[in-house]
Length: 492
Image (cartoon, rainbow, N blue to C red; front, side):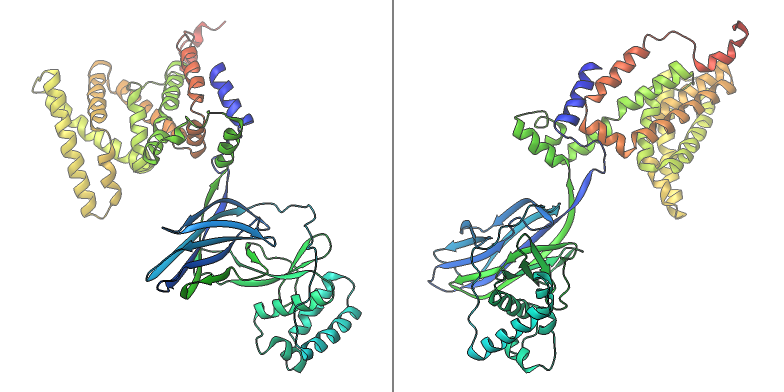
C-alpha cells in the first residue's frame, strides 16, 4: 500500500497526471494545402506564413509535409514564415502544413509596439482625401480605439466619391482593412490587417477572414473592418498579420491555397509527459501508454478485473453473500459489458434455466462427471445458437449478443447449481445463483465506470493497494454481516 500510494501521489502531484477521465480540452488540427503546377526547368520557391503565438490559442504540434523539398522557417516583422524550395519540379505539386492548436489564455503582458509607422504610398488625390479624413476623425474621437472605429465607419459609407476613390471599387473586408491601416498609419497609429478563420465547426476550404489589428500603446486590439466593432470573436485563429498567408513564390503556376480543420481532443496527459521529460523522469516513458493502441484497450478492461475480484471477496468474506466461485461472477460481468446489463441478465437467466433442465434430464442417464460436463457444454452451445437464430428472425437484435457469454462458465454454473440443488435443496441453489448475479451486476457497474478505468489505466500502481486490501481481508476470521442475524441469539 505504501509503494502503490507513493507512486500514485508522485505521478499525480509531481507530474500532473490527470485524475479525471474527462480532464481534456478540445483541440483543432488545422491544415494548409498548397497546390500548384511547376514551371519546367525553373527552381521552385513557395513562402507561406504559419502561426506564431496566435492570441487565444496555444500551438501544441505542427507538421510540414513536403517530399523532396527543402524547408526553412524564419520570423520576419513579427510573422513566422515557412519557405519550401526545390531545384527542379514537374507537373502538379502539393505542399502541406498541419498545426494542432488548443484554446489557451492570452498573455496579459503589454505587446511590443512596432518601431516605426510608415504611411503607405497614396496617390495625390488619395492623399488629399486621407488628410481630410484624418482631421475629421480626430475631431470626433477620444482615443485610438474610437479613432479606429470612426475610420471603419466612414469606410462603410456608400455613395461617397472620396471613399470610393480610396477603396477603388473594392469594398471587401480585406480592402477596407488595408485602407484603414493606411489611414491610421498617416495619423501615426500602428495598424495592420490580420488574417485567419473561425474554428467553430469542422470543414474543408475554410474561408479566410480579414480583420484589422491596431496598437493602442500597450496591446493589439482587433476590429471588424466591415462593422467597426472591437473585439476578436471566440474561436478566431490568427494565421498571419500584415499580409495574406501565401507570400511570394517563384517557378509556379496556378497557385492555390486551401485551409481545412478538424476537431479532436487534447488530453492533459500530454502536458504531464512534457513535464516528466523536462524533469528526466521515466515514470511515464515505461507506462501502459507506450503500448500499441489495441493493447491499451485490452488493458483498460483487464486492469479492472482485480478490482472486481476485490468486490467478490468483500461480498463473500465480509457480507456473506453466497455465489458460485470467484471468477464466474467476474467473467459474467465482462460479458455484460457487451450485452448491456438488462439484456445480459435476461439471456443469462434463460440459458441457465434451460441448461439446468437439460442437466436434470441427463442425470437420469447416470453419466460420469467428464462426459456429463461435455454433454452439458454441447447442450449450452446448441441453445445459444438456437436462441440467436430465433431472436434474429423475430427482429430482436439483443439475442445475438448471447454468444458473448463464456460457454465454459455457463456450463460450470449449471453443473454447480444442479449439484447444489441435489445436495442442499432448491433454496440453497437459488440463493447461490442470485448471489452470483448480484455480485456480477455490482462488479459490472464498477468495472465499466469510466472514471475507474481511467484511474487504473493511468495509475496501475493502485492495484498494489487493491492487493494489500485483498491480503488484509484474507486474514479476516470474524463474523460476516449476514451471520449477525443468524447468531443474534448469542448477543449479550
